[in-house]
Length: 476
Image (cartoon, rainbow, N blue to C red; front, side):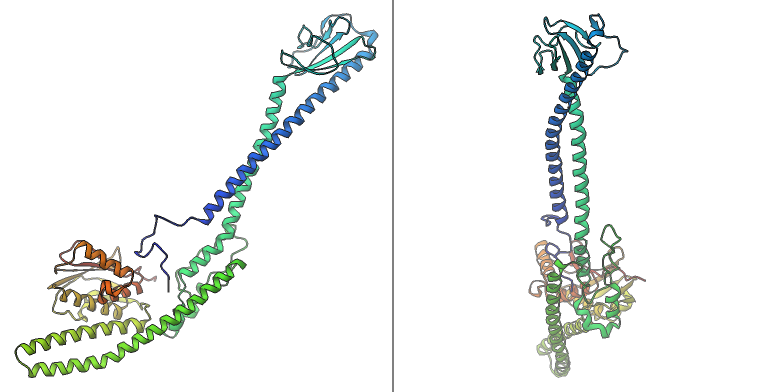
């Protein structure tokens, strides 16, 4: 007993107003949180790294100054008597130094990349910033005669900070992205049981159990078709659905959170199955109980028509025709409820099938085609449709077969209906309301649904045109 989801009453997917996807919503949330985490982590790490890098570079200046000053004090008597830079091979000097006399501030020695002019105007121990863009550390010797200044360009320090911050920030963002992808995959894996439950519900037929004696293998089909538990080695967590066999019982829930849903669906299916069984039994009993009285009425009317004359005979003939139409409806109801609305398909010729159906005085043009359908159900539906055509003024009906759509196409030469009336009838079929569509069309639609198709009222044709879909051809 498949339940048509909202927006699918006419058999077409409801693209407009589609419900939001849990996977997409969770994925967006995970991505936003992960990217936000990555950005926040990059900001925090960048701030910390900037501070620590500055401290590390300052420590390097201090340590370099102490080392150089220690060497100067150790070799105080052997210092070269030169003024200028010490000779060195060409290289990029990231840290420069100057050895200055405390008294006049004169630069006695310097590294080859250090400026000739003093780095600072005053010699004051500690760190200082200059207008020329230097970060300078100054330390005076123990005897107070000399001072060493070690400096680094602020641009050099900024470049080092940027490289470190960029590397750590990119690492944090990549980590956040990897976390987002991993969480998205985990979300899909955890939601896979919902997809399997949805597939099981799509193939769930709680009424099939009542017809197991007719089919002979319903229980075995349910066991074979029940989806197995998720394979723990399947990274996607979503094993493919097994075929299209109907299920008489839902597979056990795969997650604790699905147990209440599983139990509620099972209870609902039991209630629906009991109600449907009761309705089917009542309708079948009523239809069967009507057959004998209808046959008796028809026989009495036939006798009365032979004995009557004139206008009375015409009225009796019309009454007999109405009785035969009612008998046709009763036969269709019996065929439906005996089958339990499940089609027992077999190959049959369309011409042979139509030959067994009362033509209601219509001229029939039947295509030579082979169908895969339930002959009893299809004959009952055709009988009602032909009777409808005759009662609405048609003289002839063409019955064709659209192999691509797997649908019978009936086209009569009657007056037909306008677009508004056609839409009204189609809504009645979609909503299964006999008062809006008429019992004959509703019965034909029930037969089409039993085959996995639908009854469509379409434009075109000579008069009234309809397509009776019979669903896909059975496998094998």
